[in-house]
Length: 197
Figure 1 (cartoon, rainbow, N blue to C red):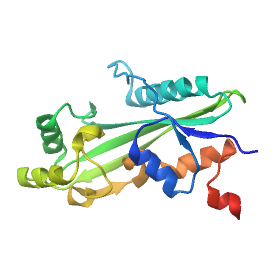
Figure 2 (cartoon, helix red, strand yellow):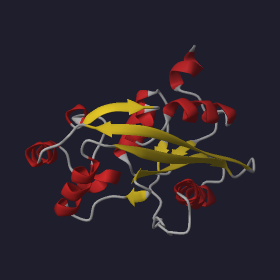
Figure 3 (cartoon, rainbow, N blue to C red):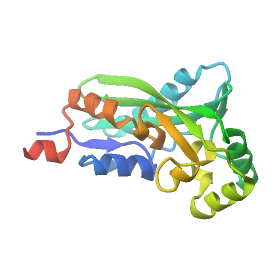
Figure 4 (cartoon, one colour):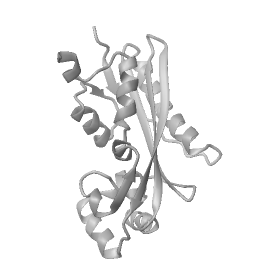
């Protein structure tokens, strides 16, 4: 009997990535306030947040394999989270314009009944096109930047602002699927397609 699989995230992008890969899963969005302590490294911070989300959901569903993730954008050592408002979003894209930055995603997978958990993180480098204020305005007319770290998304209209991506594309979307799929297999979770073969 395959274990229940829960995505501990309200992110529609993570849900889409798992669904497109063929996974059957439930969604539980944990009411966890993400911490942003300056004394933690980016790696520690993202893994800390992902682990807190996963453990919160796993406590209520000990029989399930639970996956949680946390994504942050960094440039010049500064963290760019979700913008507070549109002017903040505009300022973020102006800062990213014509430059490279890093996207960090940490993933925590746990199964309480088995007493098993695994955490890992992935970094992708994203190079932006040089953006005019008009280009930023046009982009925001099509995309809501307020629920996205760094005020942008790689998918959809991402090509309008992104020059190139080094590393995992799905990591920039919000979940590094290549590494995640390998890790889920170790917990007995596979896409439905794979199970049917």
